Length: 455
Ligand SMILES: Cc1ncc(COP(=O)(O)O)c(C=O)c1O
Image 1: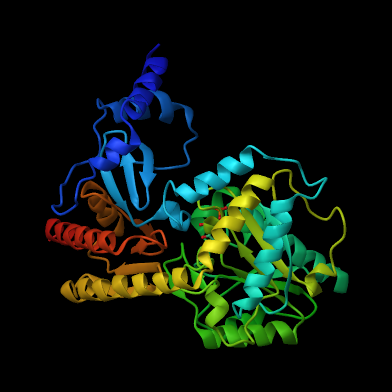
Image 2: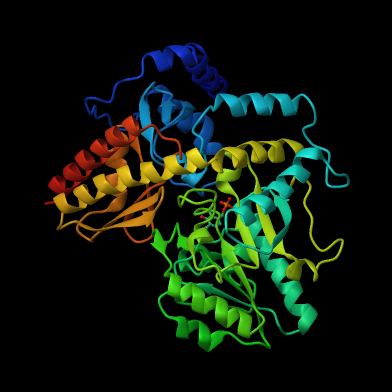
């Protein structure tokens, strides 16, 4: 059978050479070698077209590229090509690929207890909830953080936040159910999270969504003042730095005024730090650096917490907790011992002072070079955006960010797009400095190639 042969062939290519040999043969990236994506009659093309694509639902647009493994900030594909990874699986693998210490932790936990349901307590989940609260408070963020609901993804963390907020509102009055969200925000793809993600491309095919959602503008506090009400609004959900929407840092003054409006109207403030949190901004939380009045009532996280293993969490204050009862929410897998054990390991690493210092140093290296690139192409690059290691190059209409992303891939660098024509850079937080400069050389070269080909 074609299918069986292809799977075997694909596996054979990977297992036929050891990871060690591959790393030994790591190209130095000193010369930029350009290779277009694998053809349909390559090993990759055969695997994609006979084994994978015909059996996967049509929800993703993907090039002919099959990743087989990674090490640190290098990825390897089925054709034995190597890529510098500036994407970390969309801001997830914060400690890099195939982290050896983490592999040992996983191995140890899988040999003890993988799953036990939420009918009972387990050690790693208890420790993780406790640690998230104490480390958050110690970091100067969310000073009233108190309790944690563990789940499996970002969208689920937001679903829990929205449900908790509705429950809180309803304890005050039955019609206090409205939620305010913002233009260009992204909160996930399940029905609740999608309902507060006001992007017609994502929402339109699935309407009607959940009702009682208002959309405001992060550039205009009056747009919130117009729709917020003590009688009807239960929560406002916002990313302190919008990720998918284009790496947009929300102005501190706006957040101070937003918090004030929430307090005046007894409305819960939800910070979605799923992409910008967990040390990506250079602090544990993106809101850690804000005026201390700007604390959320609910904080959601996911992505980096598992370094690639699915996990999410919703952290709340006692005020929110007071509205909850046994049976209000639940999950089979959330807080399972393996995910939670990984979360403990990752959180410890991410909060080491020297680690955070490294993130900030790497951010400076990136920003200095990105500024140079922006100056070099003033007719095409509008701005360098972002904070910490959540960065972006805002291009103007004369260059297409997708074309730049594709050209970078051909040249051995993985970057992704965001928002309206932004090239997004979200590497592992421990990416070696040498790979930063090599990757940025590839970005510079690729941008030049795309600009030249479009003029
Ligand atoms: C800010 C933010 N919230 C929520 C989500 C949804 O997370 P997940 O894809 O894990 O459901 C994402 C994913 O990109 C995100 O960036």
